[in-house]
Image (cartoon, rainbow, N blue to C red; front, side, top):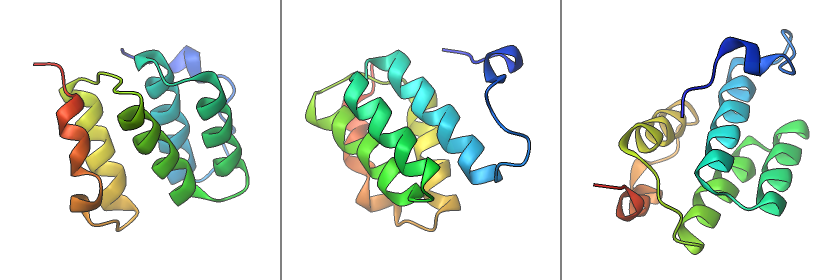
Length: 100
């Protein structure tokens, strides 16, 4: 599930660091199996500076549809939550989705 620098040709250099991280996170969620409609919605939320809604959409929909994630993806989610100053316990329920 590694994203190479060449895969990010669409990421605007003037974009905020948080937006870049969220776009990457959304792409990785799609690779895990996030549904297309949820993928589009999350990206649109970032486009309109609704980063919290974008993050919440990804996490909630992965959990709702019981889409498996790996430990690295979970770690990214925790890092994003910390950057956004969201209490980790609000999203730690997705630990259940980690493939062991």
